[in-house]
Length: 211
Image (cartoon, rainbow, N blue to C red; front, top):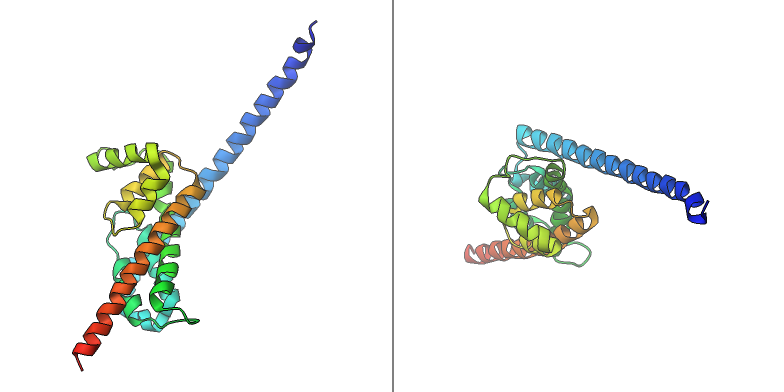
């Protein structure tokens, strides 16, 4: 018997073990994504049922801003007051630790949105979805296959009604979760900072005009 023949079964067992480990990791990842989607959906239902008002930002502060944007991002293809809360945060929330409010609004709201967008990612990762037939989704899906991280960042950095489709497409092409999160976080923080700055500038301008 050749030496390679004697060791071949060991190699087979090692391949089977590797496949088994990948299978366990795959099931764990799917379970995690499903759990995230369910939690975000529950938050969204509670949010719209109880009708949280953006005007309460002064009362709830940055914690309220975080919740509004977390739930707004998790609400796939549904309207939410998250964008208004960013404008309002720039106008009504106070500076903190010597940094202007619009920077804190961008960081807090951007982080919340990055977490919330995992609901769309999970929907795409889980299999067939109802938006597959939409031409804009097919176009975004193609971009995601070729330049996933850049596509997610660019679609995050501007107010974008098609962003939910991009998140779903990212899950469908199985973009690594870490890359997805960092791309979305970077874009959302920048977007929320300049929107909050515009909100703060608008409030200051109106204040001067009303004197």
